[in-house]
Structures are given as structure tokens and as C-alpha cells.
Image (cartoon, rainbow, N blue to C red; front, side, top):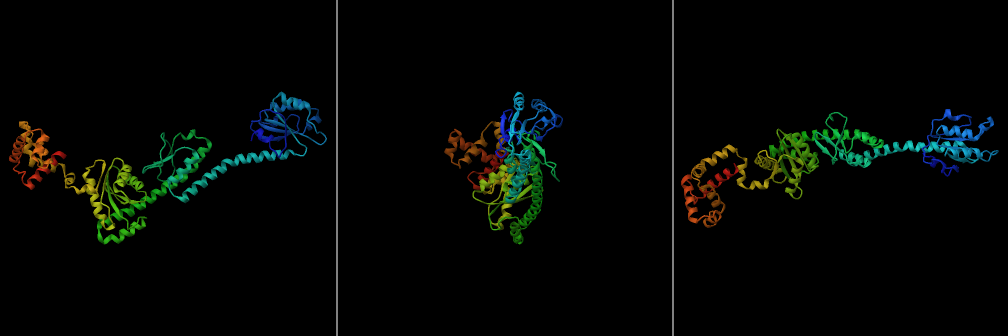
Amino acid sequence: MLVRDLVTDPELRLELRVRGALDRPVRWVHTTEVADPARFLRGGEVVLTAGVWRDGGLGAGEFVDRIAAAGVAAIGYGLLPDAPEVPGEFLAAARRHALTCFVVPVEIPFVQITEAFVAAKRAEWEGPLRGHLAEYDAIVAALRRERGVHSVLRVLAKHLGLPVAVRTAAGLFGEPPEARHGVALVGDGLADAELLLPVPFAELDVRQRASVTQAMPFLALEIERVRALREMESRFAAELFEWIQAGGPQLPAVRSRLRSLGLPPDAEYAGLVVHGAAPEALAARLTEALHGTGICAVRGEEVLGLVAVDGDPDRQAAALHGALGDAGLGIGGPGPVDSLRASLLQAAHAVAALRGESGRLSYARLSSPTLLFAAQDPELLAATSRAVLGGVAEHDRRRGSELLPSLRVFLDCGGRWQEAAQSLHVHINTLRHRIGKVEELTGRSLGDTADRVDLYLALRALREH
């Protein structure tokens, strides 16, 4: 409360006689009639007096001097029925000290002024508490609408006026601020969890620090709840994938488990297989990305999953892979529950074709038989290529000929002589001589379909490796 707030309170009807520092905070309201009140004052008080000290012979100016020396914020003179005027000396001394001075009407008791001050201070003291309770209620209401770390973070960010996030071993919750100052969360199993703030905690004001402190238990509780749910879902999901891989006899159990996990048993699903470092962390990120549209579980060094197909499967696959970071993702074909086993096999085949590299490969690309090369052992492919084309490659190396490039262009042109010769910038007879030499060295005839396929596949293996 400021001096201005007190002297302008309409219910008190105080009359301002000397305008001093009206913006000074009021520390307390003190009534005194002793001749030397300074020893009872600490500074910042509003002193109320009715001039009884004059009966002891103390002058009004000397009384004000002593009050001003104590560092009071203002002084009020109470009128009495038999003394309806303020002594001029009293007002003159207040002006000399630039001390705010007001007159209290006869009908206003000093206790009413004290009560007004106490009411104002109570409102000030209750303000932070009410704000604290309002924030608590806001977090509870948010969690009633939607459980989760994100709900708590949204409320906290609103009250702080700052972006916030939480980092755990399973990943990030919320949008992390550019500058990340961590505040550790306290709870069982939360040694690696922290709240990320854009400024150090010590630089927040008192209200902001209180908001952070209040949100901490809610964040810890939600993280622990999410972790417990994920552990339970992980066990259920592991059983689900065992049943899927068992095939037909377990289909009723698969449908029932999907339903218990909150997934529609009659939807179309695509199988997912993820390869990469730290499969537990990959499973956590995949679970977050699926956001209730699928399920996943760790099996050995890989993560198995399924996702309900909604719209463009390739768009869904791109979004999921974006959440996985540096990992390989294989996606099987979409279909009903009874085709999930085949979809997971397709996904496994697709991710194997990536050979541990980051990226994604969908079932659609498996329609090309040439992709079978990607699933073979590199040494086997190299040996196959050497067995078919080793003599041709050796001829090119020793004589500087261009038999292999000519064969590749010829096959790429579909066996059309003139088109291939033009692409190679050679005469057609030169090309015929080269192809004849290839046939001689390999024992294959390009006029024979099986031999042509052998040569094409050997070239492809050579190109791939």
C-alpha cells in the first residue's frame, strides 16, 4: 500500500494538507501521543496523532521534527470536537520536512484508518497465495481434460510467459527453448529428467520461481505415470507381436489385445520394423510419434510396430521416420488384422535392404525383384558378379577395352543396337564386335532371355558393390 492509496481512500475522507512523497510504501499505521515516539518507530509508518502530547508542553514543530527524523512516510492529525483545527506550527514543520500531512475528520476514528491499511495489506499478502492456488487449480483442470506432461507444460508456460520443455531418457516433451537451462526433477527413476527453461532458475522473479516449484511435482507425477503406462503397454505389445507372428490361431487374441490397447481391431494396419542404435529410445520416440494410432515393442536389436493406415501411407511413413532420427524404417503393406504377419515380414525385408543405413523403405518398392540384391550378403553378390563377368572385367583391365560399359548401355537400351551405338558414340559394327567379345568371354548369348537376365543381374550386382 502506498501513501497515495491511503489518503485518497474515499471512505476515510482524509484531507491532504501537505503533499510529500505520495508514492512511498506504507510499512504500518501507528497511533501515538507520547512526546518522543521515535524509539517506537522503524521508518515507513503512517503516524496518527490527536495532539495530546501538547498537554506535556511539547511544541507541535518539535513533535513533527522527531517524527520526521524517524523516517516516517506520512503523518495524520486527528481533529477533536474541542480542537477542530490543526496547529499552524504542525503544518509548517511538515512542509519543512516535505512530509505528507493529512487531517482526519472528527467522525473518523483512528482504528478505521488502521483497518483500511490492514485490509489493503491482507489483499497484497493474499494476492500471491491466490495466484498460487489459481495456478494449482489450472494445472489440475488441465490434467482433468487431458492427462500428460504436455498439459502441465502448457499451463506453466502460460504463467511464466516463457517457453518450457522437459527432457527425459525417453526424449523431449514440449518445444525446447533455444537456450536450455535445466532444473532437475525429483522423483523415483527421474535422475535423468529435467525441466528446460530459457533462463537460469535463479534469474526468475519470485512469482515465476513459485510457479516452477509448484509445477515440479505434477511434472514428476505425469512422467512417472507415462513411464508406467509405457512399461505396461510394452509388455502387452510384446505379447501382441508374438501372437501376430504365430498366425491364424491367435487372431482372436490379436483383435482382443488391439481393443484393450485402444486400437480398433477392424482398421487396416501396416507393419513397421525399425533398426538403429538404442532400440529402447527408438521405441519411446516411435510411441510418441504414433500418438495413439499404433503400438510398438522392442524385440532384441529391433523395434516392431504397427500403425493404423490413415490417408497416404507414404506421408505417414515420412512423418514416423522423421521422429526416429538416424534409424532405418521398413514399412509393410497395409491390410486387415489377418494380414499383419505378412506386413511385418515385408517390413523386415524392407529394413534389411537398408543394410543398417538410415532411411525408410516401404512395401511398394519390394515389387521390384532387383531389390532382392539388397537383402543378399555382399560377399555372395561380389562372388556371383566375378563368376559371370570376371573374364570381361579382366579383358577391360589388361587391354583398356570398354566391354563392360558397352554391355551396360546395350542392356539399358533394351538390346536396340542403333540406339546403344549412338549412346556410346561408336559405329554399330564396333558395338557388335564388343558384344560378340562379351558373349565369347562369358559363354552367354544375348539372344537368349535367360543368358541376358544373367548378364543383367551380374551387372547390377557389380554396380551395387
